[in-house]
Amino acid sequence: MNALMGVARPSPGATRRELLVAGVGLAATLTVEAAAAPVADEAAAAIAAFTGGREALAGGVTLSLPALVEDGDHAPLSVVVDGGPRVRRIGVFSSGNPVALVAVYRLGPGAVPRLTTNIRLWRSQTVTVVAELDDGGFRAAAVDVSVTLAACRSE
Image 1: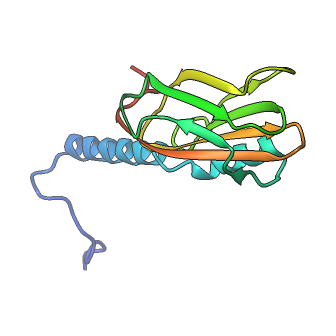
Image 2: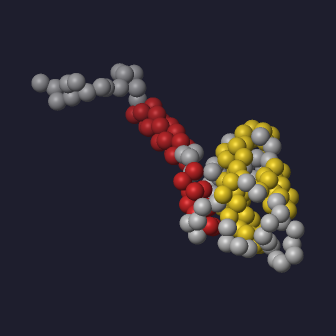
Image 3: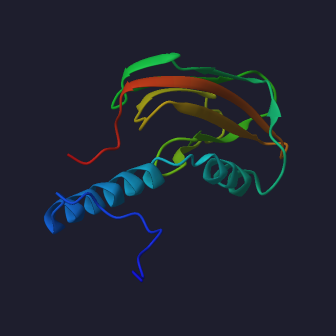
């Protein structure tokens, strides 16, 4: 009796080389899918580290970022923190980049809590901005962004 009964066998015409190529292709596909897995947990952890575990309240921050970014290498971002206590820091976080913390800006006394810059986005994702206020509170805003041509890629 054949020990392999009931086990799927490759087609009679399949060579070892074809099986090896198929296996490598499958491994590459699984690796790409694992690399593209959502990193929302990493973004939440980075925000928690920035706030020291305290809650960031929605509002008080205006985040401008296009809903559709053609080129992820140049995503124009602007942040304005509304009046109130002085702003100490502004953190920019990404739920879809390889590294969740995009940037932290430290503002000195008398600085206007406003910034404009370009950031890189790997894929469609949520970008969150958190402002640390002088009174120890945190304010946040988030925007969902669709990216047509991804950045953060090796070429």
